[in-house]
Length: 274
Ligand code: ADP
Image (tube, helix red, strand yellow):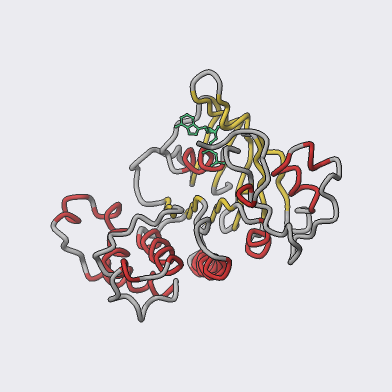
């Protein structure tokens, strides 16, 4: 049984917006999947139907054998672009709040944590390379370190599935790579299935094992690193305009166009993701 199964999933907002358009895909346990697509393509919506925050309009979503529902437990860990840490608290305390969904609100409000939770927080900080900084105030950490604390917090939930929505969008390339390296390590050490949405194709290529390409809610690409050719990348970001060879010759690695993010100056046809 696949870890994740989407069967003909459509999500409409109002009468005009089709955020996901008849998406069917299976993801096996342990896969590290990168979701690519321009702003407004439906990446966040796909992640939200997987963690139960959004109900599909049509179709069926199954995660670990059940239909996801908001607040239904700790099986899904989520990492966001904004880390939403409590800046005045230490990295350790922030990571520990990941135990909230395991233990329930009351216990967390009483800020009483079992030894097992504390150990889990330290283990998670170790996984993201921040054990030595566990006592450091989150507010004094770099953007990359904060994002790694965000990953640690998700790991403390002891999830089976790790979802990350543009986790490195606001980081410089070096910090972005660090964060991706630790996320990949966490997924592999803990046997997690991971789905990570990214803008940056060159970073995606370095870390993804499998790539899903979304455009205007349509999942039109599903392939390996070798399948992710420049033509495919152009189609993901620029639609048919890219597929006709207009941008042929721009390399994925090191060339000026290597980071084909929509924010890199080009107008992207389609939704604006606002
Ligand atoms: P991405 O994450 O790829 O930027 P989204 O999933 O956020 O894309 O958005 C897909 C489409 O759905 C966009 O056209 C967006 O404007 C629309 N959308 C997303 N969330 C909502 C919402 N809560 N209400 C109305 N429209 C939405």
